[in-house]
Structures are given as C-alpha cells and as structure tokens.
Length: 302
Image 1 (cartoon, rainbow, N blue to C red):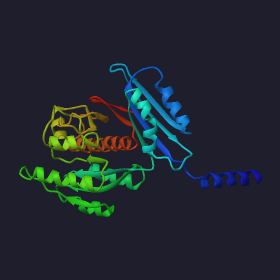
Image 2 (cartoon, rainbow, N blue to C red; image 1 turned 60 degrees about the horizontal axis):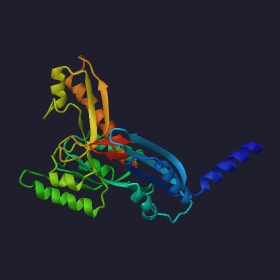
Image 3 (cartoon, rainbow, N blue to C red; image 1 turned 120 degrees about the vertical axis):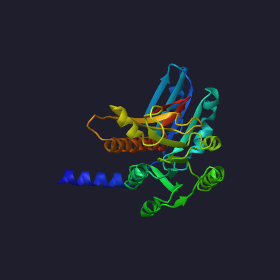
C-alpha cells in the first residue's frame, strides 16, 4: 500500500513538473576534427541537457552533418539568442547552423487538385496529433475539397489557373504564403507545374509527392501504363521542389511489390497508399528539422 502511494505521488509530481524549453540544432560544415567537441562544449555552457543526437560524415563530399535536440533550464532563452551565442563557432568552422524551438510548430499550406488521398491522409494525421505542423490553409485550383477542408475547420482558398492566368495566380499564392507566415508548402497531388520563379521563392520549403515510375511512365494514368507493362514494383517519392521538374532532393521513398493478378485499379490504390505514407513521413521529418540538404541529396536523421 505504501509503495503504491509513493508511486502515485511520484507520478503526480512528474505531471506537475514544468516542461523545460527544448530546441533543435541542425548543422553542416566541412569535416574536421573537434566539431562534436565544440558543439557539445557550447551546449554545456548553456546549461543544456542533450535529449537526442545524430551525426553523419559524408566521405564523398567531406562534409559533416549533425542534429541535436536538447532542453535548457532558462525559460527566457530563445533560438535567436542561441544562434547569436553560437556565431563564433559557425564562423570559425564555416558552418551552416540553425536553432529551432520545438514549441514553434511549422506553419504549413497544403495544395491539392482533384486527387485528394494525400490531402485526406495529412488532415487525418494532423487531427490525430501525429503530424507536428499547423495547417494554416488549403489551396486548390479546383473546388472539389472545400467541404473536406470545412470539416476540419481549415480555411480553403480557390485559386483557379489557366495558361494565361498562371503568373497572376502564383502571385496570389505568394501573397498568402507571406501574409500567413507559411514555413512549408506541401504539394499533395497538386497537378500544376510551378514556375521557375515560384520554385526559387519556395526553395527548401516546398515538398512534392509523385509516383516513382518517372521517367518511364509520364502523363495521365501512370498506374495503368505500368499495369500494361507488367511492372512488379511500384513506389512513391517525396522530394523538395526545384526548378528541375520532379528531380529535387529526395526526402523519402516507399515501395511495394505487385503481381500479375492485380488490376490497374488495384495498382492505383496501392500506389496511392504509398504516396500518402511517403509524403506524411517527409512532412513530419521536415517539421522536426531532421532533413538537411546535401547538394542534390538530403541527409535525413529519421
């Protein structure tokens, strides 16, 4: 009985214990001895307690990558203050480094056209608390999913587009991104090619998803094309958007084996599921600051 009471008291105290501020430091720099020592030494100076750490040394490029999640006792400490204090290290080691407060969730804008499986999946994961982002707005060039957006109490913006209105439509999109302080744009089967200028504007903060048949099966109904060719493996690719169409740095991919007994419709369903899971993981890892750019590739501390 006494042991049970003590256990309950301990649990109550742990529940009442205030959460300490947590931050993520992600960095990359030319590889050299002493990087981990300098980073850990800095964190000790800030009174930090490291909760998670991962690192990668790319021998092909001689670059070092690291992600550290830590907590501090000082409730007034901010990411900006930490970055300022760390600036001497970044300057000396030619380092690209960013501090993020985990309490500051990524504000996302989701774009969709007429295929809603990825949008529906992201909304459900977000509603269930499994996707650490704030979905500020849903934008579409069609009206198909305004009721779905309303059911999740998320604003829906209809931005129709034609070849003649493309630049004006993208200008409106830029305004939304700026006015709503959007950190991440998710192309959840948005079937419009972004202009080079918009790709540059969203560099490093736009994620796209597509089937992994490219470049073999281009255009409409790729799963039907794949079925006609008798493919045995299907997949999906989530990547950052660049001016090179569907060739941006890959964040996540997923695959599944298929057989001759599956219809084209069954392949489409299986492929749609892969698109959902690959995109959700990519968005989650980006939101948790686990993805670092490495030239045309990424380092993902998943």
